[in-house]
Length: 148
Length: 294
Image: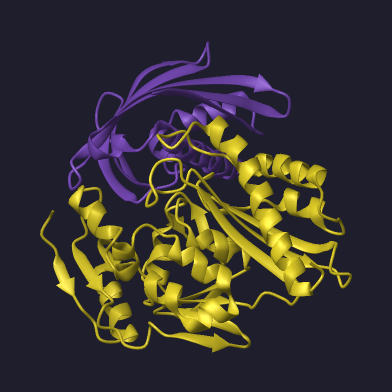
């Protein structure tokens, strides 16, 4: 499933970009993310807990930064994570675009998400609602983290 | 199903201690009607099941300051058939009577259904309209929350890890009031509703105009919800076709249904207006009977 989410962060684009390209730091702004560490070649390993409906997932996986272009203010990432207990997982491609906006920076996140195993049985609307709630909290965390 | 530890504490304190010991990997089970199904589907694989079956004293249905207090381990069937519930808050007994099948009602518990927080369930809708409050116990002590603040998201509640629902408290409906619970079941009688609606109408002393109305809806959002904008239209008004239509339209703005095999989101939104109109009509008529103006 693909979806696009947008938010505005009241921080200058350059500053936000530099913050967001440091994966372990920005990952801490994502609710449920624990312990992200850098491997080599733009790859990071992390642990992510999320509840979707009655299912509590504990995902272990990697994020790879595939491209970052500070002139175009765009970046692409790929995430793969699995829940060993439930035998399911996610595969996601993320596109990030930052645009200067009045009073800050407009952030656009385009996600192409594939859900494997049992979790996929939950309908797309539920997962989309969860993703929206996650983004709202992420934006709030990001804002206070960049402000420091 | 996965292998798991099974613990059967005999008291609430013991149950809380076991939950503390296993942390988030433990799941509480009472009737098992929801959890066991999810375990068989391998959606949930707890490392420990904490059964509340042997815990004493949590299944009482009793009076409470003129209202009722339903212990968390009372079954749906007990709530449905309790003379106290039938006499004091008949709409609540009627709502429990409408849940699924009698086999499920004999197993499913009042508190378990709340903790499960499936937005398709019936009792939370009526309990929300009645302004019920949830009693919660954890290792740190007890607290109480309005049911409206208890449901947070799809299958998510305000319960912290290690906390349990111990009871639900329901104030009695005021005099000169009426209540109704309706659900739209286009498929089978034991299915989840496409839309469920509960309405309470409290009349002015004239016994005709509405002083206060409460409308709660199920199956049309990630939690059961109140249609507060619709409620606001009713205060001070007399029953009319136009008013019911306006309330139904207002209720549509409160809902955010998911499309599924019980109907598309758009269809459920339209049916919300219909069910709100019907529930209000029935509640209003019951209120007028109670006020003796009909």
